[in-house]
Length: 139
Image 1 (cartoon, helix red, strand yellow):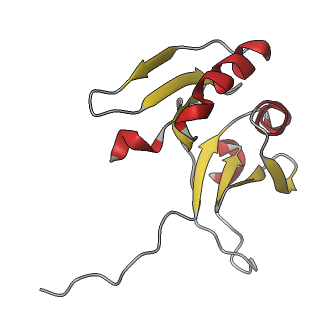
Image 2: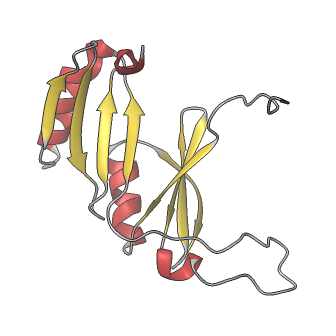
Image 3: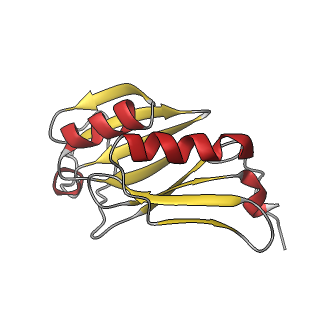
């Protein structure tokens, strides 16, 4: 049996939001990501370390591309809240909690995993479950 070719990691992850302006304010103003691309009514993209976070409006991305489209990206979209986890050094977790609470973000959960590592869970304006975690949760 042949093995698949190697991968180098995750390049991008997607979340969905109806209000892209609220998403942009949250991801830049609260989380501190840099906006790198925007198409009003369709998407806003952010640099997240070596990856990119894509935030799409599902109503727009469910529409198939025109037959002559320069970028024939297949239609996609999701219903209901998604999940996205950001990695943070363990010594910054208390500072993240204080920062989020100062920005009026409700913390849904804050705990240490049995295998080690801490996670803090909260919601973005679209209702997606966002986690900031010590990478030790997967070691």
